[in-house]
Length: 173
Image (cartoon, rainbow, N blue to C red; front, side):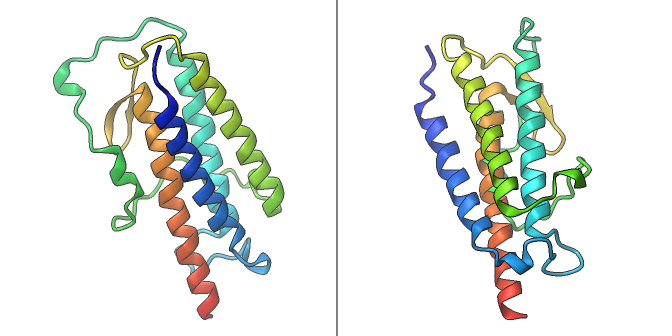
């Protein structure tokens, strides 16, 4: 049995921080980018929803088959915690689905529904050790199953910071 408590708590705290930051964006600025090179709060929430949906789908898919052996030298990766750092901007390889843009409450509800499915996926694997399952991340390298969920938490924190930055820009304009 895998102890998922700390990972689930990390996901919960990160999502709470993200949702709090999203709710602090003033309503009139929800769909307005803070500057021409930035995403609006709605676009940030859509991106986070898309990433979690894709990641959970990939994690569910890979665990339906036996794990693929990955040589030890190909298992090295950038620490997942660095994802939360906003010092280096990275352009996502996932195009934004503008059909996900909506009112704040609708978008946050959709994001919450996806988190419920993500946590159900984690719980479903509780009796198995899924560390041998790996997926390649475009920037970080080869991550094991649990690293991907740690990544989701760090991703929430990163984008909570981005929402805080947007709020400050909107406040000063």
